[in-house]
Image (cartoon, rainbow, N blue to C red; front, side):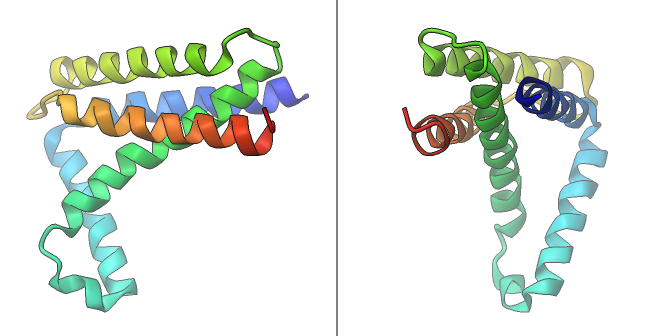
Amino acid sequence: MKKIIYGSISLLILIMIYLFSAQSGSSSGALSSSITTFIQNLLPFLKKFEQLESIIRSLAHFSIYLFEGLFLTLFLNEYKIDNLLRVVLVFILLYAISDEIHQAIASINRAGEFVDVVKDFLGATCGALFSNKVLLKK
């Protein structure tokens, strides 16, 4: 049962990442702006931070890959894979690179950025390490 749950969540996150990358620049920007506005309305003192939207976009990259790293680690752990962290992180790195290529090719007014791959990989690394060291206690 754990395999199905962890695998399904991991797959859904990968699909979400793919769909976000397929958005046009204007759609992606509108989503970021609406989330930024929501947060500023919730926490009005943040309205003075001009770079808030950029920070939110960076956190979005980091956090979605953090959850992917976490759930992919839990999923693959069910199969008793040797070098679990290495396998997870290589897969995530390749997916992050392919995601930026997809974004640059398939999206209108968007570019693939190396710095986004770094954010993605750092998030996935944190998720995988948390899963491995805290949840699985390895």
